[in-house]
Length: 179
Image 1: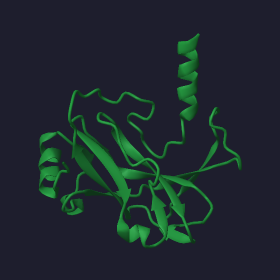
Image 2: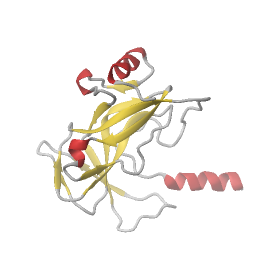
Image 3: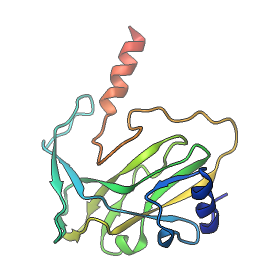
């Protein structure tokens, strides 16, 4: 089951969902709009290595926006810190943004129960597109979970700003367990 807009508002009020800052005007019939934060990251190397940390280059979105280029992956972030210890959050790009040719979160829309922080957005434009800090870029829906809950305690907990891949940490943890 998916939460309706009024239930999202109620859950944000009573603490079952945390959205900070919470703006009632961003509540939709069954989702909550999230806005693009002011920092983007791009990877510095042409070839990325899943077994190593990959250096990034920060980009600040100025008052005149920033022009995204096709063929480049940009890591953005939500202004809002969003999470829940009760519901499963899923983040998708807004249809208005998709109609501009910007893919948002196409490979990792699901959030874990217990994650709380700013969400990293994977932005990939199909043509040059100017984006602005504060623009409504995505929407989060909340689903009811069934069964026992184990809260998220992973590597991206309490994220602030865009987070590059930390896949390499999974491998390090597996190696430590194997030794």
